[in-house]
Length: 155
Image 1: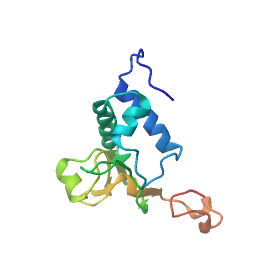
Image 2 (image 1 turned 60 degrees about the horizontal axis):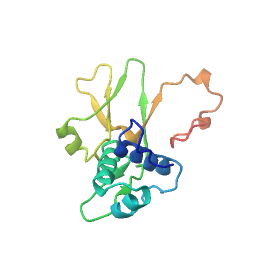
Image 3 (image 1 turned 90 degrees about the vertical axis):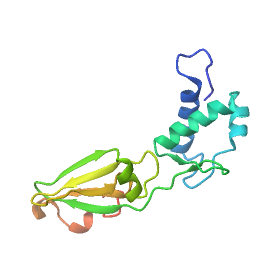
Image 4 (image 1 turned 60 degrees about the vertical axis):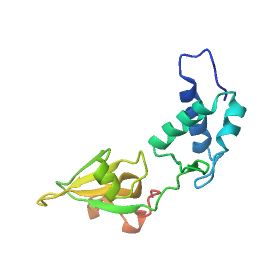
């Protein structure tokens, strides 16, 4: 992919899409560093400010982490905890408040899942990227309960 200077899409958004595609296809592995800002700027013929805006967008979306003095790094997905949902439970995904983000030590751009359980006064709050919701399953619907993969990758 390349930057189209005549497109209506801003340069930083085009670059963010290019980098997002590289992350999604594994060209930059989870936990791996992106190239230096100056290298990205030279490769795509844009200014360092454009690169910084692109990286900020990706960080806001929770795809990368940025620390001063270090290269941007692709976030590693945390292990997923299986959270069972029962009849009457409600799960809502949303962006956290600053206080919730701080208390859960969330990276920028990571949503939370709020679970409201029937009969419970307070909702449970979980980082959305660290859980897998599992709805209640009737025994008659499953031949063997071992068919349900509790690691998050499906049957």
